[in-house]
Each structure stands twice: as C-alpha cells, then as structure tokens.
Length: 268
Image (cartoon, rainbow, N blue to C red; front, side):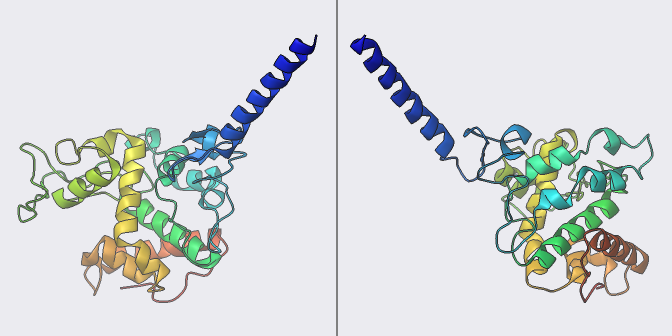
C-alpha cells in the first residue's frame, strides 16, 4: 500500500513538471504559446487563450491596438466583397492568411500610440485595396515587363522569370523578390510565382515590404502622403493625381472605420 502511494506521488510530481514545462512554453519569438502551453502558429496557438508571442488578440505593446481586433472578418469582407465573383483573389486572399503572416511581423501596427497603430493598419489596407482592386487581383494585369534591373548583381534575374507585381502590395522587381525571399524563406528569384500561389507567403511579402520601406514613415508621423511616395512615387507631384486621391479616400474611409482621424499630410 505504501509503495502504491509513493508511485502515485511520483506520478503526480512528474505530471506537474511536464505540465509546468509546457505551460511556460519558452517559445521562440515568432511562435505563439497556446492556452494549453504549447508553441506553434495558426489559430490553435495564436487565437483564443494565447499566452505569449504574436497572439492575434494579445494586449498591444507600446500603447498600440491589437491588429486582429481591427482587421475583423467583417472589415476584411467589406473589402473583398466589393470584388466581382470572377476575381481570382476571391478564392485566394483570406483574413486568416493575413493573420498567419502577421505572426512573423509582430511590430506591425504596434510602434506608437493607439492612434498611430490604427492609422498604420488603415494605411496598409488602403494601399492593398488600391493595388489589388479590392483584393481582386493576385498578378499584375500587364505582365509584359520583366522588371529586371541587372545592376543589382546580388539578386540576378533568373532566365525566363518575370518580376511583375504579385500579391497584396504587388511586389515588383528582382531586387525586391530576392530580398523578400531571403528574409521570408522562399526562392524569390527562381520561383517568383510563389507569391501568387502561396497566400501566406503572399501576405508576408506585403508585410515584409511594408516593414522595410513604409513602417518608419508612419511611426515618424510623416503622414499618409509619404506612404504613397514609398509605394508608387509616380503618383506624386502631379504625376497621377486621380490614383493618388483614390488611395487617400480609401485611407480616410478605413480610418473612419477604426474610429481615428487620418492626420495631416495626406497627399504627396
């Protein structure tokens, strides 16, 4: 009888150690600690009850707002539902894919105040909406240009490949495909079409470009106009005023949706 009690106590002690280890997680920075104490990505880990890491609904850091709480399914649908049923993006882009990709970029919408956070998410989706025609397009409609700049010798263009716009922000040029591929972990130079076939990588390229080129513009308070210059400078200085103003209107609409003012310096 005494031996059984000892064995039972040892069993409970071991279970407690395993449970404590699991609950503490110790996940790497790009993984979520689930409500049950395990590391991973996706809704099962980063969704309801997430304890740490890039949780979808975790309390924001630095006074920012939870991106997942802003980009609700209703908000996402309000964009993509404006695309016609025949649009290829209708069966490609999803909110869940955006949130899965977001796990690799935890600083998106998190540097600064709640106002700055909302403005950044509004700006991102204003450009995404404009670039893709309300999430209609995956590939650029004009695919005649290879967008190969041989001066970027560290990102040599692969024979037979074209680096025209693909994905939520229409990633273009060999140097962007090469750098994005190295950062994200896919062969951007030899397989650029991955951006048009893997929806999570597609959103990751958009977030990668944003964090590399646009994020600091928002957090430093330069205004939405400066983000237009980073995305497509040809629209600035009177180049394409209708396109520029279309982006501004989308941004103002999304700021209104999030209950925040759009700020100053809206045009470029």
